[in-house]
Image (cartoon, rainbow, N blue to C red; front, side, top):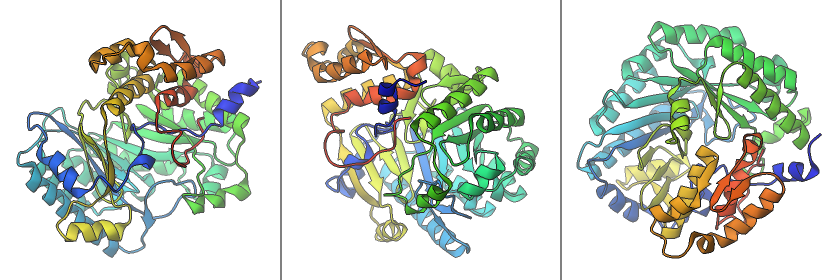
Length: 453
């Protein structure tokens, strides 16, 4: 039986910390002019990471929290795509040099909503703008329901190194409730298309906290994913945020698991993944021990950005497409979320930045602490203070955060030994709560977040 205090903590609303400060704190005060300067000052000897947001899907899944829309015709997709190429060209002019692409990630929405020919054109535009080499990682999120042979070939020819399949759950009753029907045999057939092109590295996304899930059915899905050959599994807790995504209310008549049931689902999936040889990475990723991301975690060089956990070491992330977020040494910038607003800005020749945030020195310190805690499940605040040349003693600098840490430690969520804070393996689900102790923005404003577990 779960400790009542632990259950209460699991219901806390905290960010996922794919950035710090988090996106709800971005403001229009950081716009295209500032971001243009950041672009022009990028060091040409440093690599960058690239993210492309494709905001279209063939069908809307009721659990979806992404910025996407459904289009039965290709014309809106083509219009978006033409604008995307214009945005990439505009950035290319500002860069002045062909920066190395460390990682390229196509997300959505559904990147394979793009026609095969357009995927090829996109790959060429990226290679015209950035330098690719043997170490460049090119990853694409895939909806297996709509993957065809032509698209599989286009992905391989574009140089894609890994695909990630949206699975969520293989149980037929769960699939019907979330409006995402994709039987196991169908996914196997689509994987065969990818294998036929030489694309064999793939991961999958799973969700817990959906209607009709039980520990047994979720463990069965894990077994099926393992049998398919996935080298990585991202296991996310479903974020029910109907105030942001009204279509999620369509799940409510089916019933959603309560906090204790969510914890039981997570525990069942974690156990099933461990039994099948997957190593846990951070709070929600699992990988074969020889996978690059598992090696990075063991070596203490795992990173976290807007795509989640990554082996990418680039400090700059350039985002393209509506709602895409870029990260620079100086701060963050988010494109217009609405497709029409983004297109209008690009058409006018401007960077389509809607809002952002300039990092203060203290933001950078706390971002570093939060990232290391989220990646390593431990952080040495003394080393953080030394790296950022903090003049005052770390115990004084982090005094307010450490007071919160001590309260969490009293509940068993973490351990503090002087300036080292550690989340024990059994409490990894609660790492976001521990990380929030370093968040100076969380108490400000009225931003709503998903439950911690």
